[in-house]
Amino acid sequence: MRTIPSRDRLAHDPTDVRDLADARSDFPSIGHHPDRAYLDSAATAQRPAQVIDAERLFVERDYAAVHRGASEAVGAATEAFESARQKVARFVGAGENEIVWTENATDAVNVVALGLSDASTGVGDTILALRPGDEILITEAEHHANLLPWQKLAARTGAVLRWAPVQADGTWTIDGLRAAASDRTRLIAFAHVSNVTGYIAPVADVVELARSVGALTLLDACQSVPHLPVDFGALGVDFAAFSGHKMLGPTGIGALYGRAELLNALPPARTGGSTITTVTMTEADFLPAPQRFEAGTQPVSQAVGLGAAVDYLDGWGMERIHAHETELAGLLTEAVAGIPDVTLIGPAPGTPRAAIVSVDVAGVHAHDVGQFLDARGISVRVGHHCAQPLHRAIGITASTRASAYLYTTADEVARFGEALAEVRGFFGADR
Image 1 (cartoon, rainbow, N blue to C red):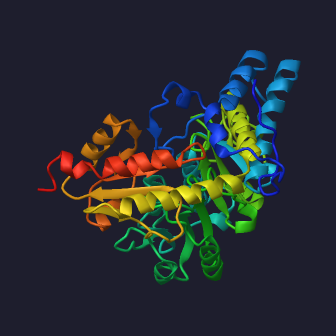
Image 2: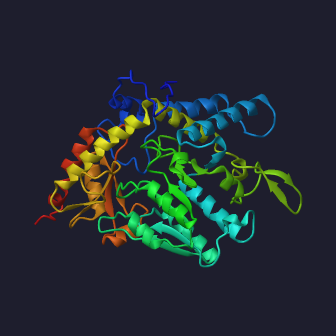
Image 3: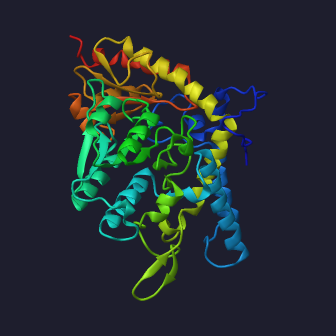
């Protein structure tokens, strides 16, 4: 099994002279499709052989139930499972007891929303209860996964859902968020990086705002944890959610971060085996976090795979990956900005953003744009990207999105720009 040694992602080995271009050889999908430019990593990232091998080897050698029984097999599986949790916790600046395994980031957000809903009915610690007239604050740019759970929570508790509007370019401002906040705000939920615009949120300012009104914060970190150094403890957020499949790991696993005292006060959204200390026929007492939230059979091999993905990312260094993607973000925006009648959504060229660009091509539907690019060996995402309110606010129904990762090259970005420039002519939209 090939491995890249794990190193601290911030204190990177200065003697390591490898180029990120070397990483491409680690990805079997790239080897199988050498002529394809995969620019859809914001949806799902490709997996390196090191991650695939780690999960396969665990299943072949150490696969067993975890936290159930005292056999040698269970002990080995449990050690691998909890070792992965330790790696992920360290990677995001969390304590081991502050990382809860979930199905994905959507599930993680729902764990919090459902827990707050139960707390509001008197279950568990009422310090987390919402009352009629309390406010949940989000932005108009949120992924549906960070909108729908709060709609449901508001309906269940009588709370009011409020939001900061987006501007004409699809981004929101801290001033807009401040204007929407009040002394009734109890939770502010927002994306660290927009999956549509690549906008990077001013997390420190949002945390300061939340604390000034006595609100909790939940950070959608799906598009940040895989791409830049993230330390939830230093950021000061109360909860955060992210997914394994966007950071080179398996599908079917994500994580919820929560400050330990809040997780232990939050009622578990799902109950069952492995979550309890004592059960009678009429009541149950629950374990401390994270086990209180992990009911039923665990995603054991997926956790091992995610741990291997963290090892891989650490091996290259998140600062190095972020620098590479910052360069690609500049190339992407420059490529788009020079094409007539193609509108770039999000921060303007020269403004900090993640390596995500979404565009509207005048006179051509996004689905047609995507098919044209796909015919030229360029994989992108088309549609509303689970962000209908954002698209509606800027006057379009769908957009075409290109997104990069550590294995993306400048040549692939150039191919994207050249092909995008041909779209309107191919469909006769320039006549």
